[in-house]
Image 1 (cartoon, rainbow, N blue to C red):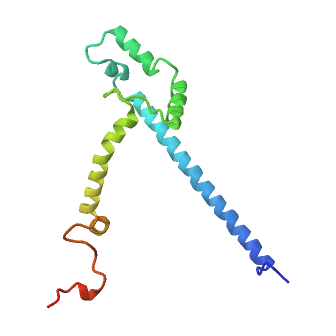
Image 2: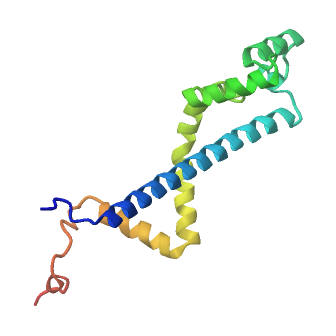
Image 3: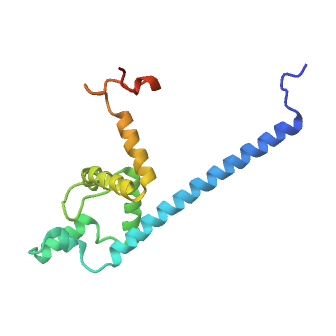
Length: 165
């Protein structure tokens, strides 16, 4: 008596499909890592080639040469570019994204402060630009809203939609 109703050909086919799925996910994941690494490298290079001195911006407009040099050491700009890039990767992977040059606060806290307003703007833009998606967002928001005194529950039957005599 066979416990497995699959034929030998079907089990081989299932293994082939499973391996193909694993390969597909590994290709997708490696592609994702490549894109993220490429974006990190491009942002690093752009930050180094744009005009201006980050250390002077950090120290302020009326800083002395000694203060700018101290800022350069504090920000790690006195190290070789490859060491800076590796430290940049390490900081991103560890969650230490550094301090903002403009606010002198941790970058992740600045992002957390700006994220709610950004999400509001994205939602408003989606509602305006994509009427179908906007309608979906509005309907979902209304459906998820807690009941109020005027709307205690959704009508359960079509007959309850029409006011009675």
